[in-house]
Amino acid sequence: MSWTSLLDVVGAVCLLLGSFLCLAGATGLVRFPDTLSRLHAATKPQTLGLILILTGLALTLRTWAAVTTLVLLAATQFFTSPVSAHLVGRAAYRNRCVDVDTLVVDELSDALERAEAADEDRAR
Amino acid sequence: MTVVLGISLAMLGVAAALVLVRLYRGPSNLDRIVAADILLVIVIAGVALESARQRTTTYLPLLMILGLVGFVGGVAVTRFLSRDSDEPQGVLREQPLSARTPEPDGPEGPDGPDAQQDPRAEDPS
Picture 1 (cartoon, rainbow over the protein chains, first blue to last red):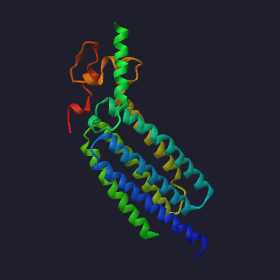
Picture 2 (picture 1 turned 120 degrees about the vertical axis):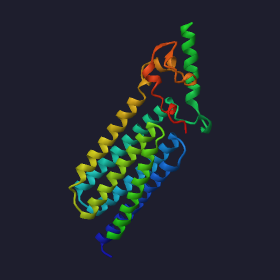
Picture 3 (picture 1 turned 135 degrees about the horizontal axis):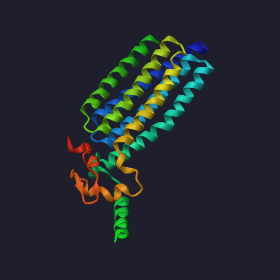
Picture 4 (picture 1 turned 90 degrees about the vertical axis):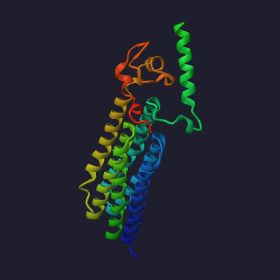
């Protein structure tokens, strides 16, 4: 087996795994009960799946221009996906899309209560 | 290679269909934002698969633009939905979580448009 066909095979496996992870993330998005758990299903398998697909594409194309562009795309995904997930989670909590009873740790409600109490003290 | 790409595309198609189900059912707009984000990631993956099939680098700028546009769009819509939360002392005093009922006129003043935008109010599931 020559070098290029080995790279082809590895790239194809990466593409397959990435697509499977995208499918897994979409399944979780449909089946999970509330917004935060859907966010969990949506961010982690999707990001890993996309990274795998981009790796497979880079292994298939095998030019430096493609590799640098795909590395840049993967890096932006790594940076932007947590930001948008954080924003969605915060908005979900504040819009009460979160079932608080299912949370194991809920530090934000304690912090909100403390801030509220401090606010009332100041108003007095 | 062709078989692998076919299987991958089929899985991506099923994933996109599932995401569309979530996009349709909601229940809140935040779920729809998450679903739209994921749909765009699936589109990026599909374009990448096509690029791998043709072995061409033509689609790489398209991938880049799709990724950035997805991020900007998701963040913009999320900020719009949570717009009552960024004044320094606004939300904690005016709308505490315990008192978040769909009453249009709280004692703190005019916050009617914010109180009406609670997505749980229309579909409590």
